[in-house]
Length: 45
Image (cartoon, rainbow, N blue to C red):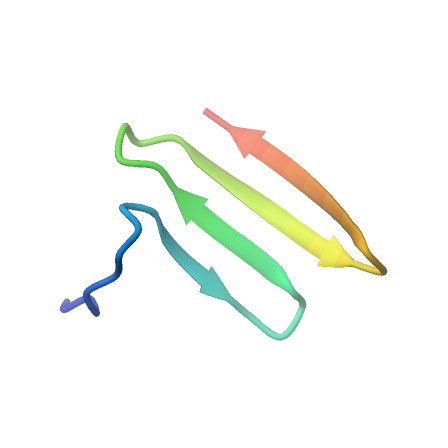
């Protein structure tokens, strides 16, 4: 699976629900939900 080159080491995907799924280089993952001007971050280890 090929990835597009990004200036950031964090890969993120944004879907129609305005959820940003982030996986850090050390393996941690979290979802950032954006809605109505508020950002909620859910961290899972």
